[in-house]
Image (cartoon, rainbow, N blue to C red; front, side):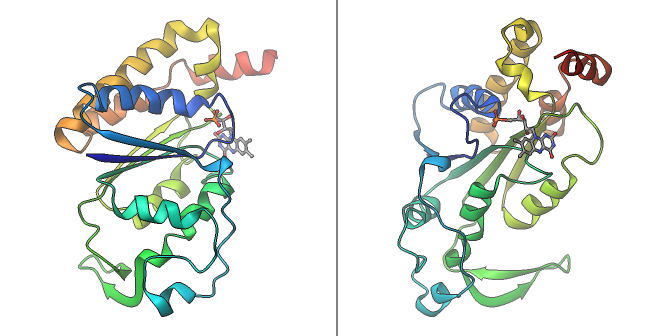
Length: 226
Ligand SMILES: Cc1cc2nc3c(=O)[nH]c(=O)nc-3n(C[C@H](O)[C@H](O)[C@H](O)COP(=O)(O)O)c2cc1C
């Protein structure tokens, strides 16, 4: 399978990407797959201009001549797309959001209403084979609502979606926290194997991946000590 990974952390040592890397190791345990990782922060991708020039041409490309068209080509050709990024202000980092906004050339103006009442644009080609994984890390301990806005956006934007939202991810780059971080990385590796076999993640697996490494009280106490 062709796997496209969009790494949306601007950092060289991304907390979230440690999880994604473990997941990829499980997913590609037998070295069968073709994985392309794009560090979005190093690409030149301007914000969408809202001109809808793409809908006049309907060629699956954006009228802005920058690195987004290379991503669009990979996008349409992928079996799995993994969005890996930190939660920023309850959503995606802005440079990655620009990539998402500029996937609009992959749909047409024509609208369709789905049986559940939601409305979408008709796709330019059959992208129904594409499976999406979202792995998002965040700096807060687990609290209900932190990921709500992101979850709604991803549910509306992505097909065949498996989404994992992980609290306390800065701990992944703290050597003293390895005793709780390493088991989580192992769970991500196993989840990658499950995903390769089933192209989905069970509710039990997602709950295991999202389980906080330590309690909210301990996490807040540790953060506030610094
Ligand atoms: C601009 C900015 C906004 C952030 N917003 C949130 C937020 O809304 N909720 C949260 O829990 N963490 C938030 N964080 C913390 C990051 O999600 C956290 O540090 C994460 O572990 C960074 O992951 P990375 O190393 O993969 O980039 C924010 C961090 C920054 C820099």
